[in-house]
Length: 376
Ligand SMILES: *Cc1c(COP(=O)(O)O)cnc(C)c1O
Image (cartoon, rainbow, N blue to C red; front, side, top):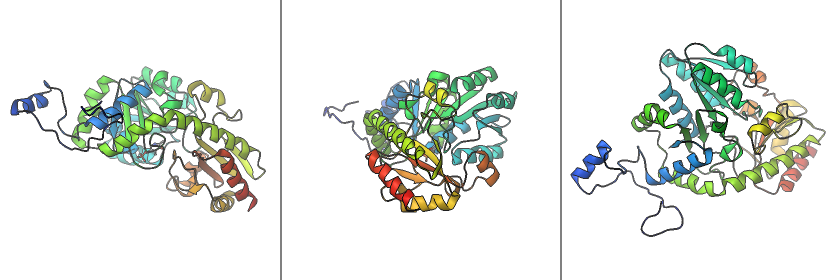
């Protein structure tokens, strides 16, 4: 979209309202007879540009941007579900998504069953007559377990339920869940889409009928709208997403191999390494292994903390998908509030570390890890 100034870079429309030519024009906008914007809680030209490009990238009919990834996820749940419905979710999911399913939805009489996402029998067995929505993340955080999208989509279709996929870890560059039958895709654009750790954002991608019947009225009236400024940052970031994802994958693959050669590392998890238990499935549905490497150090929490504290280039933080490399100890941070038994069941052991590989020179990152491991 260009203004009459013919700018080459997309403009930022930092406005909450829009003036009309006349009272008649205002009436027409509100009846829908006259196209155009009314109020930025509903839509905004910069936000529209971001949404249209996200839809094109994901191969989705329509997209709506939200204030954060969690605004996207909770808007999908709350607009699609009602009292008496049942949700099936893969256990390995982002902590806040799990909180919404386990703590918030039950207050509205919406029940759930959590399953091991890579076990298709568990998905099938969990389906009830009132199952309306299946939710999963692949690769999952932080263990990078892969879920078979096509198989779970088939289970959802048979149940007449929606399959909602959180695609934040892969980004649309590496994986397009709708190509495998997913009905709705959600993103935290805070992660790889922004790619530089600057702004929160989220996106829902879906079909026209879900937008019209469920999502649109919910978003317009509850207001989890993205700031046009954040939408503009994420829109501009899409121009380099493909290049950045390729660099993240290349760096991560190199670091995964480096870590696997280290004596003090017990296990390395990376979807595109041949020793990942679902390597074939990962390669069938993703075009790259992603930017996250998860690994377990010998010596549990103490050794994990020692390694983190000795790093000089890699930051200790809990975000991911940044151009800067970030290391996280999931047990004591992102998964601290998950009960210990459930945590172990997810594979979040005391020695587990999640490394979001940034865009620095991979050799420098390996050197940093090497010096930190030596310091042990
Ligand atoms: C970060 C993240 C979210 C939540 O996104 P916010 O933008 O932080 O609200 C949801 N799912 C996954 C997989 C994430 O990594």
